[in-house]
Length: 96
Image (spheres, rainbow, N blue to C red):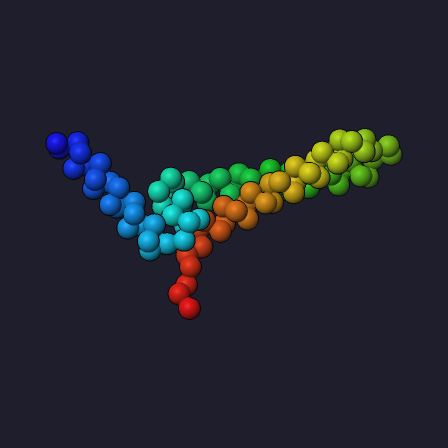
């Protein structure tokens, strides 16, 4: 009986959070704290900067490997998309 009440309380809290926020913010509140998300954004940003330097160096080389260059650029775009998605999780919606 006590475990049923604990589950009911947890579900009630989650439903309350869901009603007050949008789905992206809900995911941030339920599945991770904002500091974890910020740390992940920082790590992805650092990797993105590193790839930016590597792409520049590869382009300046005499015979750049086009396949490798395309893969690095695609990875940069994926990183940027993930960074933007995570940043959206941290933004609170302002009521109109």
